[in-house]
Image (tube, rainbow, N blue to C red; front, side):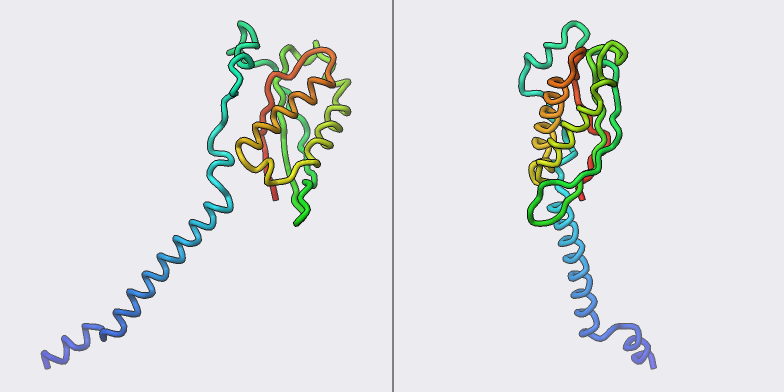
Length: 167
């Protein structure tokens, strides 16, 4: 009778192999899913911020380079991107840092022209061009340049993305 008890407690050899195979399969599926998520979402897109490659640009702000200027947040943009393969949307909220108080600029008077220029610029971009950190850096510079061409009084010194979703 003692022998019968030991036989009941131990599992048949086939069941153990199945258990090990299921565990290995589960780990492989989890690893594959994690790898796929890493590839699709990418770690370089938003994890790091690029500093300006042009040192004269950083020092051109004068003695007050460390003091931030007034920040103006634009209403969110929700727009179609120029992708040909499939329909992609961009939801983007932009904050602009000005070189002087907003009241001393013509920002409010030029706001419709600024939004129009940004809509034209952003809808001309494909998702793969703005998905990377370098792509975001380039689009920031393009936004700053376009807005500064429109404004007569005051300039934009920096562009911040406070919401950036590609779907």
